[in-house]
Image (cartoon, rainbow, N blue to C red; front, side, top):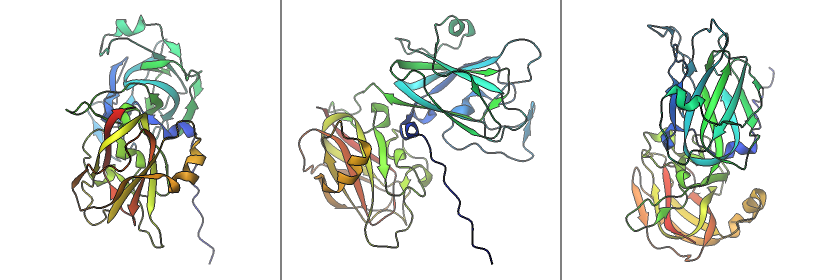
Length: 342
C-alpha cells in the first residue's frame, strides 16, 4: 500500500496578513459597475470563499458567485468601483477567479483614488472624471485561480478603487490588503477599541488556526455563527494555543472584552493576555519574545457562548502588541481592547 500523499499549503505573500479593506463586513461597498448582467457586483466583496452550485440558474443564465458581465460585442472594457471600508495604504491584492473557467477576463488593472469626503456616488460620469492612479500594472489572469499581486503604490492613502477587466467576464472575489490609517471612538467613555480592524488592528501570528482565522477576532460586527471566530484544533499534547495581535495605534488599555459567542462545546477553559510596547520590532522577533511579555490580564475563567468583560487590567502603560493565550485550546469569537491612544 502506498503512503498517503501530503497536501502542501501554498505560501502566501506577507501582505495577506493585513486587513482586507474591501471586506463588506467592515463596511466596504461596491458602488458602480459598468455591467453586472450575469452576477451582481456586491458578491465580489463577500468574505466567504466563492462557491459553485451545479444546476443553479436565474433569469439571465447560470448563477455565479462573484461579479460577472455580459459578453462584450463592441470596443471597450468593463469596470467596477469599490469604496473601501476605511482609508488605507494598500499593500497588495488577491484577484480570485474561482469557478470562472470559460468566462474569466484575460486581463485586469486596479487603480485607486483618495476622496476627502466619504463618497457613495453611483453615477458613471462622476467616476470616469476622477484622476485614478495605477495600483497595479496590467495583470494577466487565469481561470479558477488566485492572483496575488503587490501594490505598485504602497504610500498613498486610498479611499476608492477601480477594478477594470479586459474586455469582460467574471471575478469571484477581490481582496484588498492594506494598513488602515484612521481611528474612531467606539464607546461612551471616549475609549476606542485599540485592536479593532476598523482602527488598524492586525493579527500577525498564531500557533494554530485550523478552524478559523485569528483575524476574525478583530471584526467589529457580532459574529453570525461559530465559523467567524478564531478556533484551533483539539490539542493532544501539553501546552496551550496563542495568537499575537497588533494594535492599530499604541495605547493604554482600560477594559478587555472576550466574546465566546457560539462556542459551546469547544470554548477555551481559560484565557490570559500578555503585552509589550515594541513598535519597531520585526514580526519574527515578536513571536520568539512574546512568551516573556508582561501580564496585561491574569488568567481568567471562560464560559460557553458568553460575553466576558474584564476591568482588572494589570499593565497600565502604553502597549503596541498583545499575546492572547487560550488554555488549552478552542475557539473565541471576538476580542476588544478598549482604551486611550498613547
